[in-house]
Length: 108
Image 1 (cartoon, helix red, strand yellow):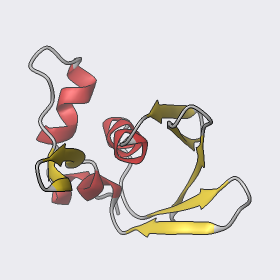
Image 2 (cartoon, one colour):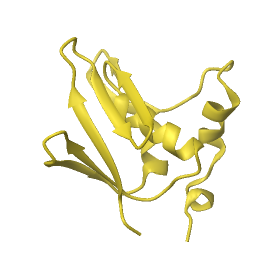
Image 3 (spheres, helix red, strand yellow):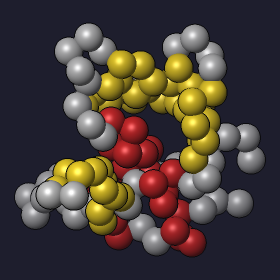
């Protein structure tokens, strides 16, 4: 399976913009993981390559469904990855991300 192609860029106001096809997510600290959650909610899975607008490879993600399960948070000890928990009143499509197991999300 060919990796999904995600593009990212830093915006002047301190946010990041991540795009995949017609999906576009802007966020201060966690745009990439939010984009992964939106991709999983659409039924996508598998690896992804994250590239800058210049086309240079920035990072690779082994499985977007695993990346979607985490969020970047800041605490007393600095930044850390914590388990993503959707807001209780979140839309059904956003809440469905956490219900998808890694094995069920993988497509042949």
